[in-house]
Image (tube, rainbow, N blue to C red; front, side):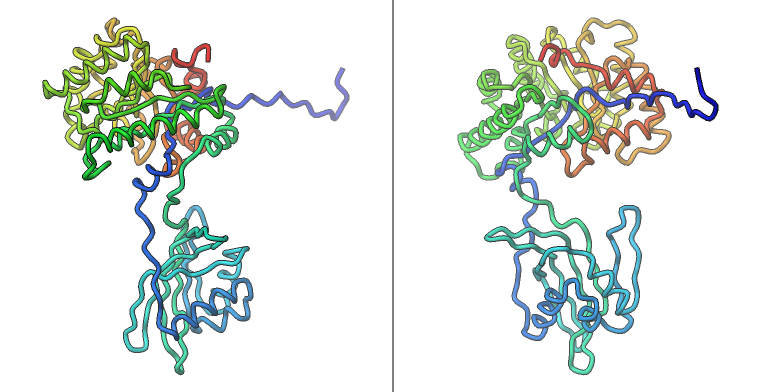
Length: 437
């Protein structure tokens, strides 16, 4: 019986959250250092500029002291707002804004300067220093003017964040992101293939390159091993290298490594070249014998956008038959970050016709919303339906630089015009290689 005035609410619906993130990466120390450009080296400034910089550091949260360092009509670019940047004008207003940027002591690390009469600039970073560790929090540009013999700041332009940290990415960090998103499991794809690219290991001998490949795969295995109930790993390498099958066999014995990631673009693979195709077929045969699933980044270069149908057809005709017993997952909906319609059309047609070669074929959605137009996203949704939502696996890709899983899934749900039931189906999909793990 309900009493008058009682408010009855329906039980809140359980949020739709993916069971797993099927496309993640972790970087070892060596790979992180190679992937991200190092910050520019610090330099010394003339004494008078140094005095201004030191005063700016020491004033930190003191609005009154800060105001004396800025010109009367000084400008500051506020980039703290996630949605937009805005200008702040006037020494008092700028000082008030500058005072709230950092809660802990910071240093300004200059990397360039120039003096031209009564004007100057200083470029650098806002940095924190703890012991022997320095971390750049943001980029910085100061425009200066000398008034009455004293340098003052005319414009301060901070840009957040600072340069990418060249630290390794870890399983601990990823688990926190997965917990934030409510995701139970993740598939970690080794980036060892990058050491086998033209830019990956310049001037390396074959032995030096292969040592780096093994070390990166070992790093992924070690990180996965910290959370064996939540993480699995896929080893990787350039399939054109003479150590490819050797490394596949070695990887198959590493703890937690259950699959193989191939990146055709980074490895400069051209599936249309007979010599490349034969090397790929050997790798696919070996993976099939070892019962190792394969994730393939099929996209190669800008020309692929128009020629994707050729690549997809060759993939169907010449590679899938070499691995008929294992799961094959096509990354990024057959694109290089976003879907490639010309390739997807081939796969969708084969699936619609019941082509037995597509029996174990899946596709992940990693980064497909990045830079896509509304019309392209509608087309993606249509291809997802033609392929079958039961074959679609959610993926984030490495974060950073991409958004973390919770944000990435939110973008996918918000931007791709699928129904709630379709999203729920995709979220619940469990790839065969994860079943029972």
